[in-house]
Length: 114
Image 1 (cartoon, rainbow, N blue to C red):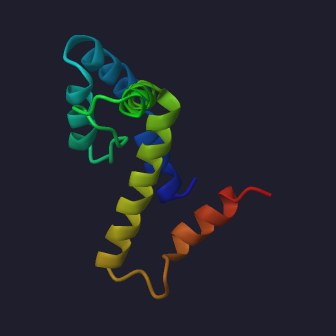
Image 2: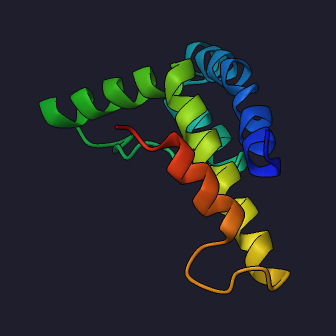
Image 3: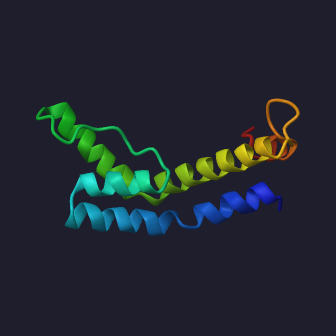
């Protein structure tokens, strides 16, 4: 297992915890608290208006609530963030000679769908 793969797996291991925490926040404090929690974790939250009063705005709030409470959504976002953070560290350390580090390229090619 490569270092990048280990970092991504480690980050994704917390997906269920974050989903449960957001579910609790939505139930107790509302959607705004869950969106704030998401931002605090360094994850871009689902886009929705908390104040608009239309059918579409309600639909987007419902969708955002579902997304924040899903383990799969968190797992995907945490994995992406771990990959970006790893690549950023590689750039800072001067290990990127092309567009992407060798380790990241190897990882993404191994995960490529056929």
